[in-house]
Image 1 (cartoon, helix red, strand yellow):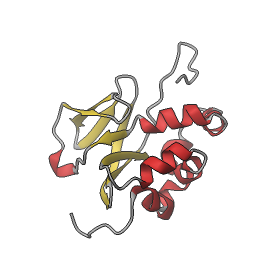
Image 2 (cartoon, one colour):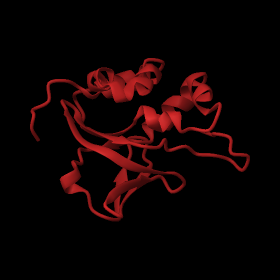
Image 3 (tube, one colour):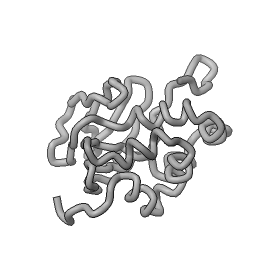
Image 4 (cartoon, one colour):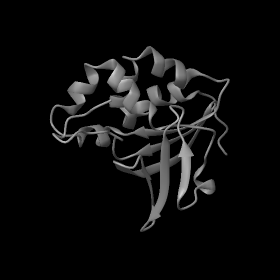
Length: 153
């Protein structure tokens, strides 16, 4: 895909203003920095935008910031093994995450949606080519919640 990438996923997230909250969170986790910088593997990364973080329920962002293992586990759920550009998206497609989780991709009213079975996110921007894959921006965070609406790992 053009333009040819010159940065890895980590550098692209650092550079893009719409990922400034994600950037702040990634810098808290050595594992996230390492995975996003890795150039020996290829990934599809569904990266939450600032809007996605700003739409979280009150206190949720602070909880993620203060709990690096939960933060890492939450964000890694949207990192997919292999590269999937928008041109390869198909309705009903199941994508396998690097954490061995499944993300389902569906097409709904002109939009592609990803879901972990509990939370959905619309893909709001596609095909940011990077040296180690591709980044797609999403408008929601894939969060697992318990019956009290608390975030769980």
